[in-house]
Length: 498
Image (cartoon, rainbow, N blue to C red):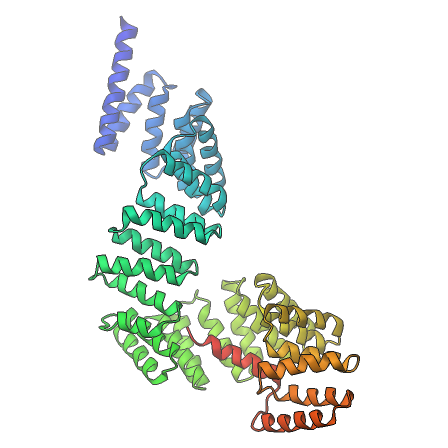
């Protein structure tokens, strides 16, 4: 009778604890659970609930230890493995969390919440393809929730399956077409995933459903900017009220090369929000494009003071220093930016070309190769590595880089020009073909005409050689920089636009 009464009392305390947890009364639940554990320390239900209490209070290590102790008692407890996995994830112990959730999935592969959470964890951990397996299973096991639909699309985009993501959107739109938050969230996914057209579709729907939401309006304007439609961004932000609104309008005007309007909107942005580093950066880009490097450097200094851990202003300062041929100072700024973002390909590239301009070709090669490792399909990086190798008297290696650059962008004039120069003495016919392509691709490339005249002369084509020399003289007027310096400066100017 005593054992029965004790068991009944324990069950009653467990029920009281469960009710207290449901009511959010953590203290009462803990008191009841401790009563149970005083008489039965190995009570699995009590330990599971107490671990839940500890986790809710942020006592993560205690909760992990308690869930682990439950698994010593019941190694095949689905609930303990699942709860332990989720607790590990909340503590950012991702590998341990995923391992526990995998174990739970072997015990109950058809539990919808488990398959969903394991799928999300795998996507977050950079394993979107495996994550998709679990997310699709979760979708098959239960109703299509908006968070599940969102994460399915996120996983498909992360896995590079854009077509599958688009199909998922069209299918899910039947259920969530009137959900402004869902449409906005999916729109952001596509925007961040480099699919601005699809982002515009979703964000337009979100704004239509919630037309007074200023954030929706700004998101749509950003999508238009990324999609190269600045005029539509201006239409969307036709009544600016915040610093962000003025910033977006300034970005749109800059994209249209309307510098006075862009500068005016930047000033309005800073009048509304004097601590907006992005607006200082944008105003600096306008100053750079107008050749006002000293003014740009002052603005960039203000941006770095407002946000010292933001690498973009350091890169921007390096651009201004590069324009002024202050290469050592450019590298000092790049050093600070690369300390914050070591994988910035554009910073590594600019670092390399400053070294090339100082004749430090071997050092430049290291930086250019590092940039190429990050962006292997960038034709400019390949061209400049080839140019550095030419300067270092390594023509065979240089030729390979020029050929790779041409393969990546067939109408890119400079590698054709440099390749033509390399081939001139040993194969003037092939050199002429490369140089002809160079001047077709960029008729302003003066030095290419000169080398083409030499190639024609070697082939005995006197009239063509004379004509190329005349084109050289015409193109050379007012052009005092070398071809490579022109190319880098043009690239930097192009990057001034958002």
